[in-house]
Amino acid sequence: MTKYKIPSLTTDIFIFDDEFNFILIKRKNDPYKDCWALPGGFVEYGECVETAAIREAKEETSIDVELKDLVNVYSNPDRDPRGHTITIAFTAKGDFTSRKADSDASDINIFSPEELGDINLAFDHEQIIKDCLNKAKNG
Image (cartoon, rainbow, N blue to C red; front, top):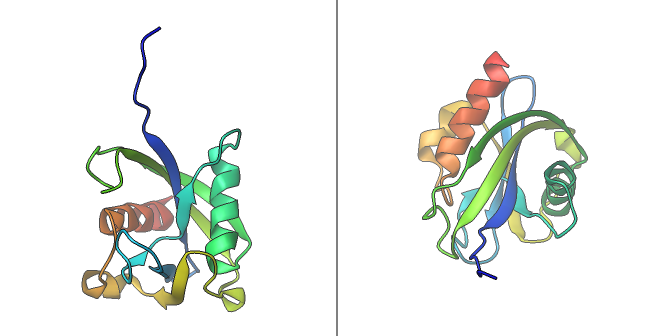
């Protein structure tokens, strides 16, 4: 039997409000320690990606989310320095007032679309956020 290297699977969640402001967490760990990132993380074995997205949002932000749309799949083999990682991005709604940095997050904040170019972002999250904003505004 041939052995295959299998990429890791993650989800990223764009939690937004009616004005398209969105939640980012500041990463507590490497890679990209102290950079802002979308809430998200690894899909556990036996878990569907939608459940993983809801779980990761809660673990990192303390927000219960309702997934709205599947945005895209991001699979560039070089997008994560830990190795080939594929992420599935979702838009979601949730109550921003219940936000609290938790799990892998050292901080949490609300950002506006106009601030996007000024944020020190992890991974390929600038592109993902742009795609999510487009989906949320036109979806």
